[in-house]
Length: 114
Image 1: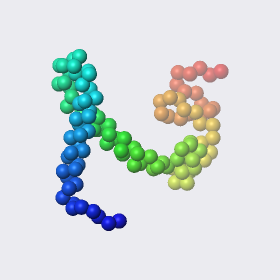
Image 2 (image 1 turned 135 degrees about the vertical axis):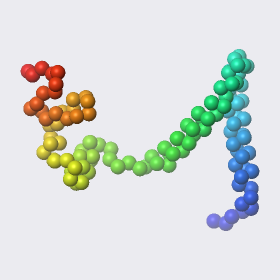
Image 3 (image 1 turned 90 degrees about the horizontal axis):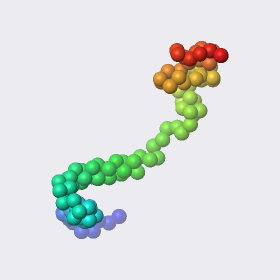
């Protein structure tokens, strides 16, 4: 790809784009500011929040393909291959809601046995 123009035009173009986006965010909220002029005080916080949200969305877009597993079975296979869990423990394990697991033949504290 051939470069056109000089590299010196990047930063002025970048700052012009930032100014344009900021101005459009202000224009978007103008009807609200006409009704509630005191709320213009919150505009800098709105800008920071919206730019942070934009960065998060760009990061999510760039990393949306970085997935390791999408099912519990695949996760168990990965852990089993790494030697971190015993394959016999996977079968029939119940979660008690506190992040710990209880084998099916034992009861969780506070539960009644049938």
